[in-house]
Length: 132
Image (tube, rainbow, N blue to C red; front, top):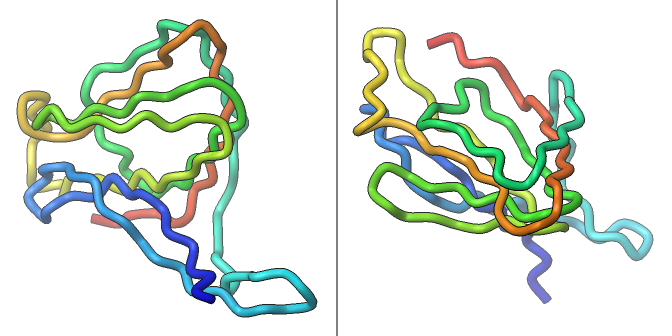
């Protein structure tokens, strides 16, 4: 049985255009648990946002694993593609702009919105720093 863990990512095409993709993490069985290899991280933050909270278009900058604990977070890309993440979902936001590219909110990034009547609770885990 394949126990690969697949996470949605918000990535970019190298020119700053964000898109949804997937990253696959193979696992090994260890005492009845299926575990990935160690994944390094730098720090984490606990997040809470009220229903109706929304951002403008932006990029993640540093790759960040986001774990939704409560509520629904809708991510919308500039091309109109969107995904809703609910309690128990995880995704990696890793879209960024090279320093040579000026941010344009009509082309680059994603926006986030807490939808529904429930507040959002999430954990943001910074996986690495981009030195672009």
